[in-house]
Image (cartoon, rainbow, N blue to C red):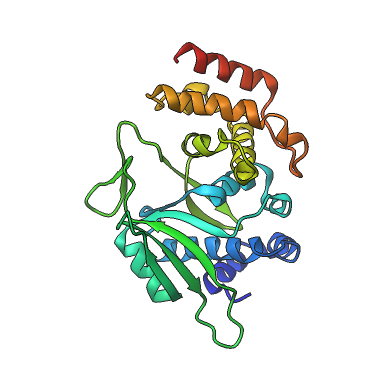
Length: 265
């Protein structure tokens, strides 16, 4: 691999054995994409930008799973080919300075959002390209004027830190990710399968970490938001028994959550 920031940190942390166990077994595109996610996190940490970004989406969910199960469990994960993240302008500049930007597409409707196609700078043996869906604005999470994210009252995305292979990763917390994924997980169709799996995996993490039900649904002030989460749980319950990780919350945990969602509808 040619992820210099990541590899140096793995050696410093004495994580070589687990690191090579995972990356020798991961299939593409997850192998490369996870490498980029961790390399970016270490780069931003070294540049003092660890509080100016958050990884969300599938890789946000993965970081929480690895935090509970350990890094070697990555080999059983569902996989994903892109990274979703929020970041400041300084974070974007750091990416531009340390990776080859092969493409930078702005959203036609949302100028603060865009898609970056990154590649490592090594010319002889570069890593494969990766797509980063990058946003410099989070409508439910504001900049405090110094480049740091400050939660709003509603606060869909709240920050958390996870240490993976010795790398500190800034990630949206478990309740935030559950709430953000519920609308798609409540939809029908195979294209939403990964969202359904993520919701059940994250609810399992919430149960393991003793996260309260109210922490999950508390910021859901709209009736349709709570309805989406109830529907996502209903539609996703049987999926985890067929998924490789087979991780889902207990029936007692979800029954109580659904009961409380109904109570406050």
